[in-house]
Length: 130
Image 1 (cartoon, one colour):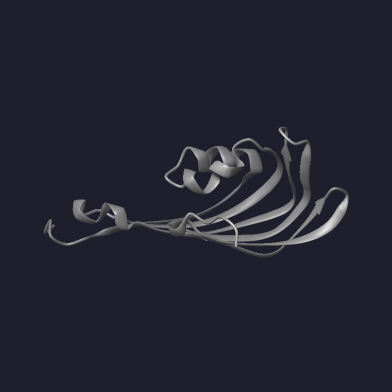
Image 2 (cartoon, one colour; image 1 turned 60 degrees about the vertical axis):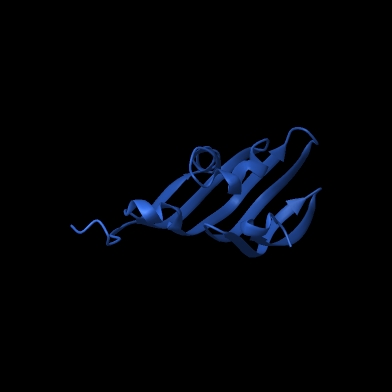
């Protein structure tokens, strides 16, 4: 192999796990900046994750990795022990890349009321919600 060429490693997979396991994985991965705002929450429920990683193997382009993920939640919950609030019956799809998080029309219960949430972020601009 010519060391001047970039040969990417492409990894694709799907996983079914608990939301707690998914959050632990996220916080231990290079994507920890995405999940750090959820670190204090107590998650429950299950998730399905589809993930595609595109990792250049050439030393000069290590920072150019690409991530494309789809996280599906059904009846999950996030309890914030600091404030005693919970997002329950959380259902919907969250799409993410190495730079963005996008979710449209997440369904949830907040303070015993039905709600819909939209999440659009740009991690390059240090914005989590818009």
